[in-house]
Length: 169
View 1: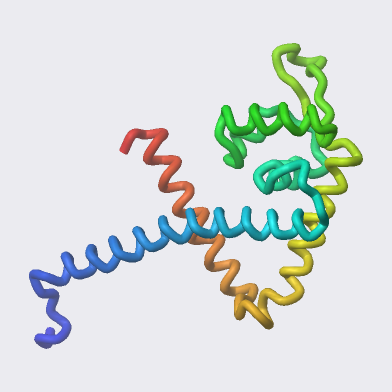
View 2: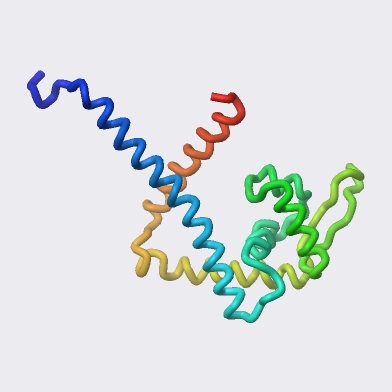
């Protein structure tokens, strides 16, 4: 082994410090990106003069999509916190974006699905995201390989965090 190839005492610390910096930057970016996504959605709602709901509620409608599900299912899919989803679902029902009814199979559960009004907002977000896809590579310089690599990494990070909580690591 040459002197250049031999591990030095400080190498592990340097590697750990580089990983620490990258990890903390990723945490910051994930949080900022979510807020930025909500800003992009709010801007689109404003452009369409949709002032009755906020960006979090619009994203909830998009995530419900064509499905009929329970509030618990929305929570377990990781989209929302418990009180957050309950509050927003209540507001969306009151505003006529979501229809809800008790489950026949489990009377404790409430099933939700979009009304025509909710479908309209869902379609607005679908059009927005489709527009983004049309320029993501050309303008944003983000291609399929970039997205695939990013998604693999984010799924690994998600699994790591789930395990941290589940197994109290």
